[in-house]
Length: 479
Image (tube, rainbow, N blue to C red):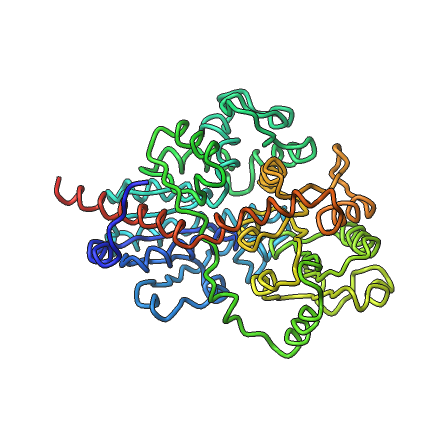
């Protein structure tokens, strides 16, 4: 990487540069876009962060020293028949209803155009769903960048934009169960059959009128630059594929790991105070953290198999549980008597949880989760080995790469329908957490800490991105 400017010079160079960021309405996108915004703001770049009222209210508080550099811009969602009231993010919806959110999101093009006309930004940075942002940028002569919140392995598997739209013969599930030919090195990154079926079904028409492949092709082809949440140190070979296949600059922004003050200063109430005291009593690296985030809700059947697997494993655990959509938190959806049988070695915590603060606790020794890219970044900065149970979208590809790198294992599942059993859950947990056979995994995961927790490494990537954005702006002004 090139030598960045010193901090003072970089800040001075960046002043006057205004970037508009436009993430998709999912917290797996909103939060990385916010981290990107904070990193740009820390380098003197003015950022306008656009989302909807309820989403802006649910974002973490911006640190005071950056607050003057980041404007949270409120765009109300237009009414769409089929979209429930107050549903402004994918977390508020069943998976099949996300198409209505896309239709409402597309209705933001007109107010966004008005905002760009009024503010004349220097850059627009948008997401994979926002197919209308490139034409707004072009209309007003503003350079644009597509920011991929997905891993480089995922981006390389998807291939050149037109390949996803069917130009390379990838139109049926079987086409996605093999490593594509443009990945010309040994790789295990591909979908399993049940994942490919689900993926292919999502590529067709939806109520928005714009299929996802069309969105993806448009955002890639319409931008000047691709930004990607990745680094050469973890997935350099896949990053090189992404760079070769896009025909335009590709800039890794680093992994955007959560700032340390996020877990050091996260306030916890009395209930969580008692839970942390329980963690304090456990042996180092002995507790399995279990959590599937807020985006994907496990079915009751999946919850029960997971619960029985945790019980059978005989390991201490803390489970951050989210009830299925529409089921109140006070309703117990776990098997009858489960909580009593696993007490006191297991905690079940329903609702919000300070997840990063929990991961940072020395008693946590492994992480059973959905294999989301952001969660992998969070876990590996603490050197936690991974017990992988991918559920949707890119998660299977992330799991393959983690298993390929021997920093975790996948829970074995039925290849046809993706079902897992309590036996396989317990087996994977014990192998990763305590058995001698899992020690190489535990050691390899610890070896990831100098990459994932290396603040200066990821700051260097962001320095280069900021320099590029500001330098591009200056060249345009001079020409």
